Figure 1 (cartoon, rainbow, N blue to C red):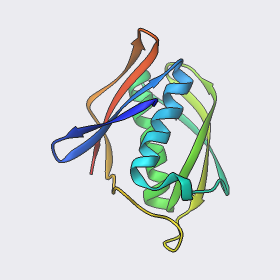
Figure 2: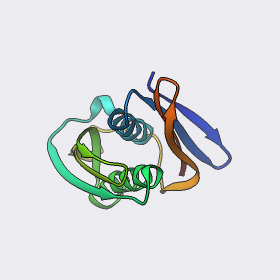
Figure 3: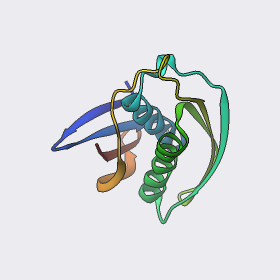
Figure 4: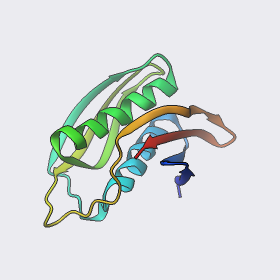
Length: 137
């Protein structure tokens, strides 16, 4: 499995792995989406183009997840999956594939309020890349 859930006092988090930075960011988006809702019930009905900036790779990851969370909290869009189109250590151009929330169809698991910097890190690991992110719930 490319990620695991971290138990954290009054919060929850993820530890994510990827062979490269693009896969790391894609898996982080998937992990957060699967914490929010049953992804098996979400279709790819809408495409959102996203351009994200960050001071470094960790900041970029936090901003990426914050933007995806904003799509849920502000626009009621559940993310099914994402695709990284272009990426540097400070910028990210991607597409998110989503579906508007339908209470008759979708099951919500967790109300994530924020993506935090607490303990956040994205760095190379022995076999690729690894990241840790804590969410305020």
